[in-house]
Length: 243
Image (tube, rainbow, N blue to C red; front, side):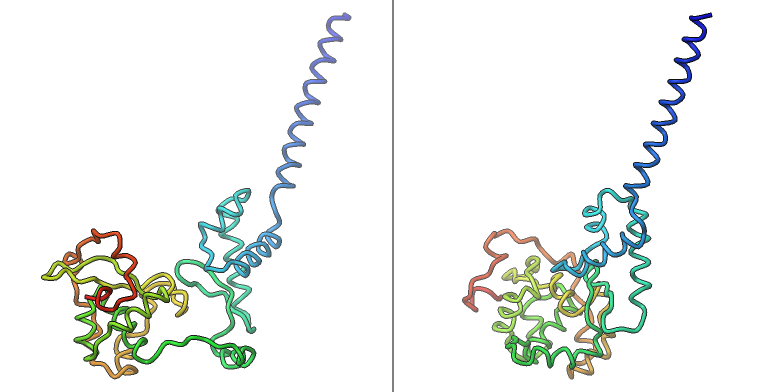
């Protein structure tokens, strides 16, 4: 009888331990799982503080204790919140997200920084950048043919500001450099991808360029990879930088 009672007591102890363990795990899970409102607030803070557009992949990496589904759900809620009228908006830029001022309030914000000196692109630089954006990859000679003027100095300026980059050489005599836009270009102009560029007809009309000249015509197979390491970082000498 004593042995049976001991066995029963032991079974009860085991059952109690199991129940306690289950309760502990459930309680721990409840603590670890953040409320959606808090997760959304964390996401908003991360996007606001990030110097560059914050991608969903980066969000999940930073919030590695949360499931991908929960992060995506919180992001979706945050998007809905920013659809309300207000001075800020959640913009999709270069594959990520940024909290920015509304574009129609730009003039008001500009007044706040009216004493700040900013380096603006010249009309010539904007025209060159537009030709590259719509016809990339493209050579300096092809850009000159579109614009009708030498673009060497302008290309150097755009390279220095990281708005364009050298992506290879064209498979023709002289093997000239070929240029394309960068991620910085997307960020500066508030674009998520190149498909968000204005209609080519509208851009051509604004720049006074014939529409066919802005249409992409350079086939990718004509481009050769860069072989010289120094080609990625052209020197300040115009004659050596642009071909």
